[in-house]
Each structure stands twice: as structure tokens, then as C-alpha cells.
Length: 237
Image (cartoon, rainbow, N blue to C red; front, top):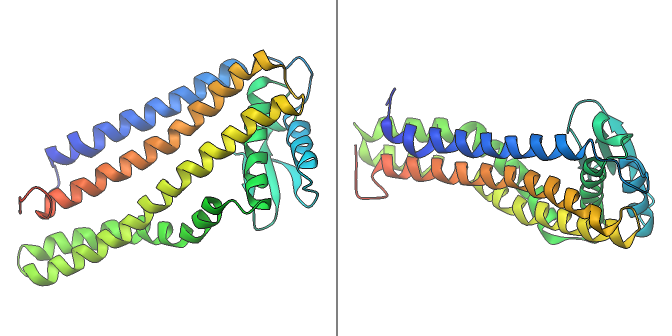
């Protein structure tokens, strides 16, 4: 199993194509629209703050965080952190990213269920991604000599690994909803002109594809493990 053509063609190559393609889309969209200034001149920080104020959210701080596209919303500390390329920029791309993160803050304030479910699955995802593959591999090795015990250990590893997939699947509606809120609210709040939403849509849609790519890659890895064990496809090695 040191070199496995099945892993190469089912997991590695598709995973690289998916992640690489999604990353390229994000860089391309953000790079292009970061050079397009919004007509009304709001910076990313100002746009995010305006959406928070309009939603009646006054306990979330908008702060600058180092790095490029390191933007995130921290529900524990109620901090909306915007990267250097977003916080002070008045580009269409910066406004899209900033208002997307504001969308997460609004989700949190309004009790959006998938956001809370995602928070609950974070420990499962961490355990699944760190321990799952090792337990699965150990089970596969044992199945060659001690089939019953190996299968039990393998299935434990599969359950652990599925925690990562569950987290990623729950993340999809969370991210798509935050983007949908941003796309709608930037116009309602008068942050951008309607025709400028083309750039915001391009940036946010590209960013959403990174989450889709991650979930598909994890699913392909899970299928690979099941095929390798013989539990899927009736093949056992």
C-alpha cells in the first residue's frame, strides 16, 4: 500500500485538481475585484460594521488580523476579524469578504441552526482528521491476519473519519447562507450599487467552491478506504 494506483486516481489526483482549481478561482476572482473600487467608497471594515449595526448587533468587534484572506468570525469572543487586504480596502472584493463574515455574525445572533451544529461538530472533526486515518490504516493491516479484530478497528476509524465529513457537510449551508445574506444586504444597506454585485458574487461563489472541494475530497477518501477494506464493492485485500 506504499504505492496504490487506486489512491492515486481516486483520491490524490482528483483532490489536487479540486483544491487547486478552487484555490485558483479564489485568487483570480479576489485579485481582479480587489482592483475594482466600490463607487460609494465603503471599506471592508465599514461595510461589515454597517451590516452589524443594521441588524442590531452591538456586541461584536470588527478588528484587523494579520495575513491575506485570514478573515473569520469568532463566535466565542464575538470578534469579526478582517485581514489586511480587506479591513481598510474599499474594493468590491474586500466588501464581499467582509460582509460575508458579517453574515456569520448575523447567523450567530439570530440562532441560525446549522452554525450551532457546526460548532458542536468541531471536536468530532478534529478527532476524525487527526486519529481517523491512523485507526483505519491499523485496521486494514490487522484485517490481513486477524480479520474480525481488524474489521472492528477499521470501522471505528471510519466512524471517527466521518466526523470530519459531517463537519464539512454542515459547513456548506453555513457558508452559502452567509454569502446569500451578504449579496442581499450590501444592496439593501446601500453599500454598493446593484451593478457592482457581479464582483461580489464572483468572489463569494469562488470562495464557496473551496468548501465544496474539501467535502468532495474527504468523501472520495472515505470511499477509497471502504473499497480497500472490501466493505464496498465486494473486494477484500
